[in-house]
Length: 322
Image 1 (cartoon, rainbow, N blue to C red):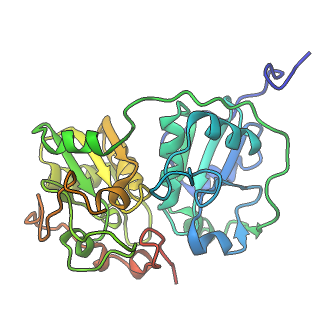
Image 2: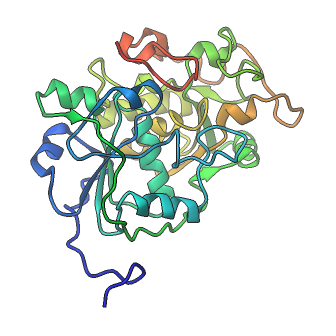
Image 3: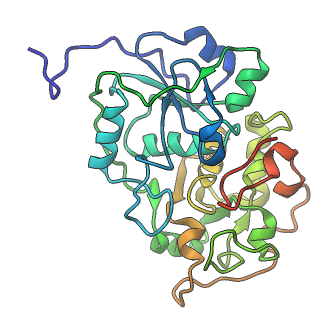
């Protein structure tokens, strides 16, 4: 007899499409057995009141982060993540498409978390909810929290995909590695104040600035693989070992997504990001001004990206779309 620990066989979800899918791909499969759609919106976008039909909340502001940790949006432990995703009805054989209300933003964080816990059957919706609605596809009013059957997902951690400050310090000293910062260039250089109280302005010595908005087209879709590769090579040169940081480990995952699409494979996200490194500490040095790769032509500031990408709330990682 099937039990919660030994569930009955399930029909697997659609074939894993890779790390990125377009709205038409999802629209053609919406409602298919084994397809789970997660809404990973954060901040103001969580209260927008609309969602892709049937989407379930991947709540990075709630159960899908470890609130006992000192830094926001910290990855939960394997047991906590297993419980949270089972409560959302996720099975190991399901296929996941994750999106957010800002575009390609916090959805990449959910995708990277799943990958770090051994789940590869996940993709980010290119352009997120704005691309979905721009295509004239249906939305529904955001209803109550998911109340369906529990799933059988089990976290199987992959060491090294989410790293700590010590591993970042080692990467900064490694000539084969590049540490890339997804924050705005003003925050990276220390000319704009940090939105979180108590954090120093500036960046890690040896890090390079690559604002996450530089990886997206004016319409909010991710740039083609060749353009993504060029953007990374402009700041990382020929280095293939890439480590990513941002304000709280969210938009660093947009860089991880872009690097994956560009063909890089040795990738890791600094989970604590600037929320940890930027705290006063003699063990974590900070410098201001331009960093590595600052003189590369064509490396645009996030502030010069479309207004949909550049306006921010005081959380520093939550983008507000007009």
